[in-house]
Length: 268
Image (cartoon, rainbow, N blue to C red; front, side, top):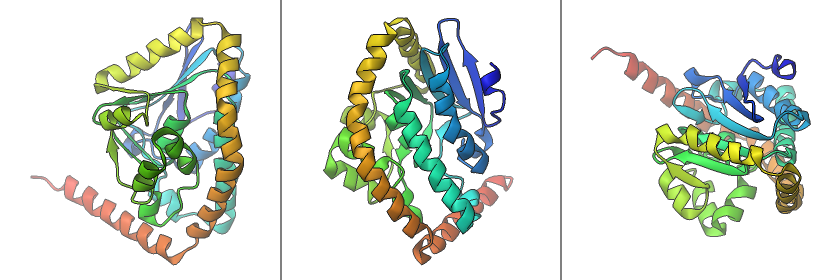
C-alpha cells in the first residue's frame, strides 16, 4: 500500500473486502500524540478518503490504550511558531475526519483522552471497552477544549452533561458512556476490535453510494457546527495555550507523571 508507506506512527492493514484497519503505534506512550503523530494525523484521513480500495475504516490503538491525547512533553516544548502549525494541523484533522466518505469505526481498546477521545466521538461508530477511561481533560492543564470536544459532547449527551465533564475534565467509564449515548456501544475489552471489524465488514459489503450519501447528509449538521464552534474553540485555545495557568498546570502535571513513573520503577 504505497500511499501509506510514508507513515511511521500508524500501521495499515487492508482486507480483501476493503476494510482498512489503522493502528496507532505509540504503545509505550499510551499512543499519546506528539509532533510526528499529529502531523501524520493531519494528512491520513485525506489519503484514506481518496483511496478507492477502502470501503470502511477501523481506528484502534496498539497496546492497552486507544490514544491518551497530547503528549505532555510535546506540549511543553511547543514554541509560538510550532504552536501555529499545530493549530493549523488540528483544524485540518477535524475537517478531514468529517469529510472521509467511508464509514469510520473507532475501536477504543483502552484509555482515550483529549483529542484521542474526540477522534472516537467524531467517528461514525465508537466501540469502547466497558472499563475504558474516557475524558477530555484540556481544562486540567489550563487549556480550552477547543479541538472538537465542545462540538461533539453536547450533540451526543446534551449541554448539561457536556458542561459537567468538559469543565472538570473528569473521566467517564465506557459502560456509562454507552448508556448515555456518548459512544455507540461498550463491550469487554477483548471483544472491542472484533466487534468493530464486524461492523466495518458490514459497511464494506453495503451499497457504498447509499451509505456514503447518508453519512454525508448526517455530517452536514456537524459541518454547520464546526464552522462556528471550532473557530471559536481554536481561537480560545490559542489564548489559553500562552496563559500562566497553562504553564503552571502543565509543569505540575509533568512533575506528577514523573513521580508516578519513578514510584513504579522502584523494586518492591
